[in-house]
Every structure is written in structure tokens, then in C-alpha cells.
Image 1: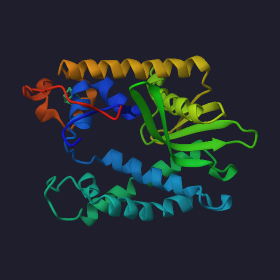
Image 2: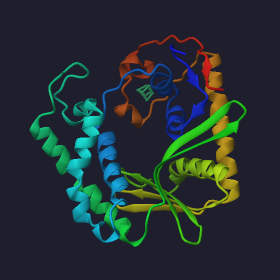
Image 3: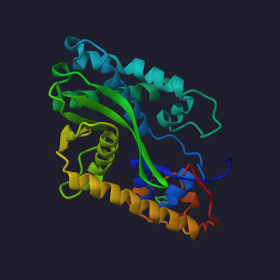
Image 4: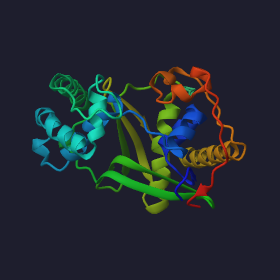
Length: 283
Ligand code: SF4
């Protein structure tokens, strides 16, 4: 299908988009409108790359100094793979047509912001004390007759005793007490998909926050994963209803400040979008 479609494969991040603002989900995942790359996301990509590759090294070489020294290489590989990254680094470039590279000052300021995240990683974990079993591991599974769920897990550790731990890194800060559920939803989705494919229950979910050197831990129970699958189905039904009625609600929140679609949003600019139902793809 070439036009806009509603994909019957969801991921935790697409679900988060829809639940935070259905209109944003519509523009991003159905219309696939282009967005200027953001600096926070790029920072996350480069730091994730370093932490992914760190586990290729012998244990004794997995030091903070070595990881910081690896940032420039990871940055170069990320920019080479996606030249649009320059727009995240240099706010003076006119997106999307400016052909100029990011200025050396902007690149240097960006690189200088990264070691603090690596330093905080080493405060919450000792990577020289274990080996990772999987990194950037793709998981996918059927949730319902007409619905799939997928995603990439930052890291999966399997202990010699067979215990499985699912790990995710965030460059932001740990949510305040009472708001952890939203953050854990992503990891519960991965646990659900892992357990569909493997006869190895997930013992622990671990979120490492590199914005403030905090950890969020959960030992999931069967009921947590069952409720997660129910929640995914519930969101899918809501998406299909929004599509059938062509009603994609704008839901203003503090996230609007980072939204690429403010000019196309009735809550922000008075713009009145008109939609038609789109076909569902991939059932
Ligand atoms: S500006 Fe806010 S309300 Fe409008 S689409 Fe973006 S997130 Fe939704």
C-alpha cells in the first residue's frame, strides 16, 4: 500500500504516541509527516550506540573512560547513517532544505553534553561484572487475530541460572512516584513478547535513567503481563474507532512544546484537519 495506512503492528512507542495525543499519532504513524530531528533523541541514539557496543569489549576494558572515548566514533557512525542528524545538532540550519553541515561549534557543544550521561550510567551499573546476552534485540508477537506487537529491546541479560532480565536505557529522568506504570508498560510489552517466543520467564525488568542516575525495577507477575496484553488490545480498538470515525483528537499537554505538528493542530494554531478512514495494513 502506498497511501496512508493504519498498521496492524504496534510498538510501545506508537502506543505511547496515541495515548498521549491521537492527533500526533495520526500525523506521525499514518500520514508519516516529516519531522525535524530533535537533539534529545539524537543524544539518546549516540549514548545507546556506545552502551550497545560496550559489551563487545572484554570485561576489563568496559570502563567509563573507554566509553567516553568511544562517543566520537558512535556519533560519527550515527551521523553517517542519518545525515538529517545535523538538524538536531545545529538549530541555525533551516530544516529541511539547508545543505550546510552543522557548525563545528554546534558539534562540539553537542559532543560535550554526552559524557555526563555515560558517567551516570556507570553510577547505576557495573558492566564489567556480567555479559549481555542480546542487544538491540527485535521481538515480535501476535496479540490478537488482527494485531501484532513489536519492538527493539536495548538489552537482555540471561544469568547462568537461566533468569532473564530485560533492560532499557533512558537519557531522561526517572518518573516521580505514582507515574512508574507508564514507563514500565514498555518493558512489560517486551517481556510479553519474549515469553511468547521462549520457554524462559522474565524475572526482572530494569529501566536505567541516565538523566539522573536512577533505576526503576520490577519483577513482573503473570497478571502484569496479562493486563499489558489487554491494554494493547484496548488501545488498538480505540485506534480503529478513531480511524472508522476519522476523529483524531488533539490532546494538549506539556508534550506539545516538543510536538512537530503544532501548525497542524486545532489546539495550537486553529488549523482544522480533515481526515478520511484509511485501510488497515498487515493483518
Ligand atoms: S501540539 Fe499537542 S495537541 Fe497538538 S498534535 Fe501536538 S501533541 Fe497533540
